[in-house]
Length: 160
Image 1 (cartoon, rainbow, N blue to C red):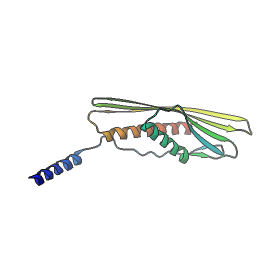
Image 2 (image 1 turned 180 degrees about the vertical axis):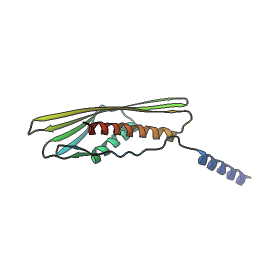
Image 3 (image 1 turned 90 degrees about the vertical axis):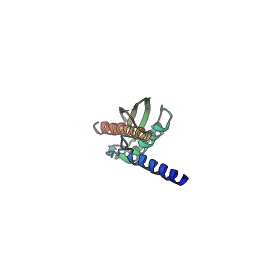
Image 4 (image 1 turned 120 degrees about the horizontal axis):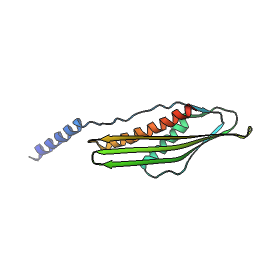
């Protein structure tokens, strides 16, 4: 009898797993390279909240900075300061909202020409889920919203 119950529960759990469907799929975004007329580059974080999503955002920004921010000059320094990473989450019954606001400042310094260029870029993105959703849907929404925010920063810098 115990064998039959075990087999029945196993079939039931497999059936539930097969029928579950994720509402939000994980996205992958390719960033375009941005060139600055400098020799060196430096990344700093300040005034950030604390949490897993902020740590994930910092990791994405660091990877983006290392892979897509290029130096192409003979003199000068590029300082990229992430002034703020603000994340808000609202969770109610059958509703979830994730909002991220990034404030990044790019400063090019050329000591020989005694020139300083500063670009302040802000981005605000949010995502909503309504109805029935899983924890993985929430995680995918959070990651996709963070990626879209960073993509928006990348696009704004490309257009300057």
